[in-house]
Image 1 (cartoon, helix red, strand yellow):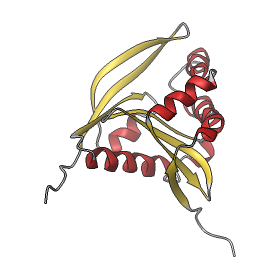
Image 2 (cartoon, helix red, strand yellow; image 1 turned 180 degrees about the vertical axis):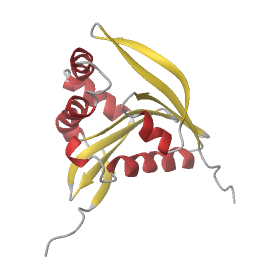
Image 3 (cartoon, helix red, strand yellow; image 1 turned 135 degrees about the vertical axis):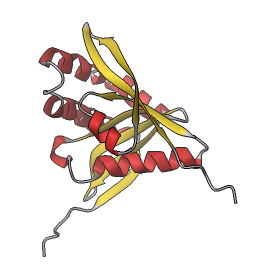
Image 4 (cartoon, one colour; image 1 turned 60 degrees about the horizontal axis):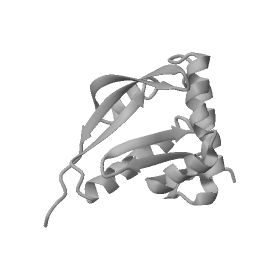
Amino acid sequence: MARARPTLGLRPFLPADAPLLAEIFRASIEALTGDDYSPEQQDAWMSTADDEEAFAANLAGWLTLVGTLDGSPVGFIALKGADKIEMLYVHPAAVGQGVGAMLCHAIETIAAARGARKLTTDASDTALSFFERRGYVPQRRNTVICDGEWLGSTTMEKTLAARDSA
């Protein structure tokens, strides 16, 4: 009997995940950001995962969670330090199935449990509305140079619910 909806799951990052997460990263940028970024900007952005050893080291150094559908990794989120979402990427085939929301909720919950009062992220123009729907408020506009291309983003902030001290 077929299931109407795939099963969402969540697990910690494992070093063996790095090559697949780099592919999810690239596929997400290539398929989802074309309305907001030029092909040259997308290529420059994707090139940040070309050094898979450095990409893996970053993911291992942050609190990185992997979202799965029926056990297969389809997205990931990374919390840098106590209060910054550094990366959130979902494979284009899994967009709209709740993976991004599940990952974001998990990181928000963990950060709050660890005492963070707010979370920030530098959201791409493509991800801006996703974060706004989750209660993040734009703070400032940014541009960074990446492999010779200027990329725009918006720093966003969300106040987290206070922990119950009882």
